[in-house]
Image (cartoon, rainbow, N blue to C red; front, top):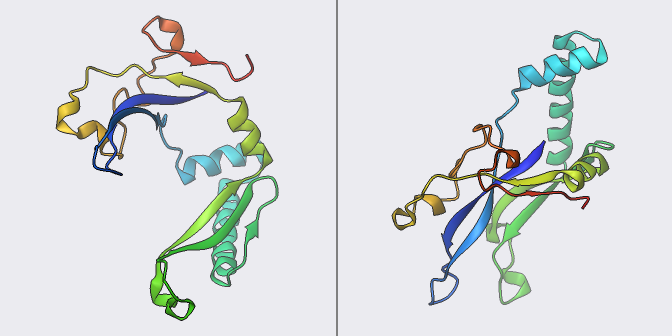
Length: 168
């Protein structure tokens, strides 16, 4: 499989110039549901699907409890989950309090299996329909922009897509 992307137009408002640039935006090729994941693991491991679902649910509950205790959760080659925060800066140390925390997040760092998968994954540019960049729809940053991940287009069809081979 390949990591698919489309080219989108974005306006960067970091300064007074409001520079417009073109950037690559990833496009997914669908979603696998928990039920389908459990069925596939069930077939792979030779155990009943409900047992797989029970183990995933139990692991999720234990992980949530550990994260609530402020612990990092390492799942072997899968990766690790750790709680983190974003906070406002203050001029004085005594001004930094719990109220300056603006966001709480759980950060996932993939393990070696996922990192190896990403490193060996081909990157494919998806063809996009003629986009009217004046309406701002392509710079919203949400959903599938452009060609979509389920179009079935690939670099071998001669439609202008480029395929980057990570090994060559």
